[in-house]
Length: 364
Image (cartoon, rainbow, N blue to C red; front, side, top):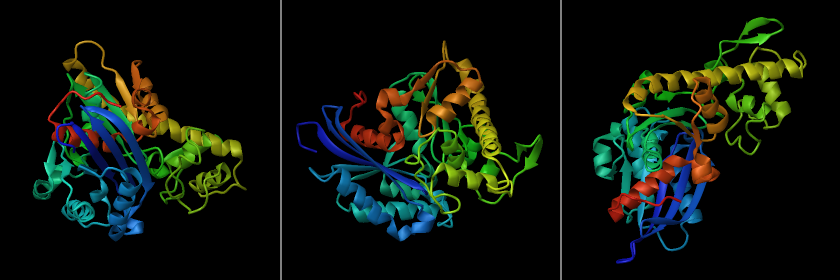
């Protein structure tokens, strides 16, 4: 930070088990003057946790190569990966990596109360910083919309975050609590095993059971239906092959223990359409659970704000399914790139606010 100029360079990280995202912001007088973002598919259980520091340094070099970094903001979900035996181990390893990469830079860690806390406090209260990235999204949206329910559909899961009178009104804090009350639905736009969405699919006039093997995932369905492009399909495929529609069809046929010589293209597309509808249902059920709890606390409308890679074709469709017509697309307010990675932008802004001591930001 430059003394007396209210200017700061902040790097925010959202360190996931499958995808890691970063946002660099340059602020001046509590306004974001510059925003750069980055995202990389980094399956930590495959690449190895020892490779995480190199990734963090790579982001810093790409996004903040000029002018230095005044502070780092961190949130994470990587601690849930089975590369770690416990959340305690995962949180501490992620923090070790950040400290190793930026030993002389102030580091602030997001907790589930939407507070930025020091590293040592985060180590002590590790469960409060585990999988807290939803709080950054909620915090940022609360600066834009006073009353709403945020539906953030990422590659792997969907966070449903209620905002009431400009404050996060989440009932759950941990993933376990949020799974119980509808605020977390473990279904996403790319990485969800088809068997976690449906137990049966329609085929030749019958409902056919599916295999529980990881033969195909949600990314294959959305690629076939045109909801995503090959470029959007940023994660590994189930069979390690490519991301063409023909290859996606082959994977989806395998879900019913068949292949592309046994099933027609239209039969495979019918299966894809059915799976899509059931995935929308999964999110709609969680949204309805949260909506019915929050609506009595709000005078007037309670819109749904959609964000994430699956925001439009999953989150938006889920809102429509439960009868909500007032849908706010955050990509129109923040830009498509920013809306796809709201947690790391949120922690960058929260870190800037921690430094600047102001609460009224002009966002992006």
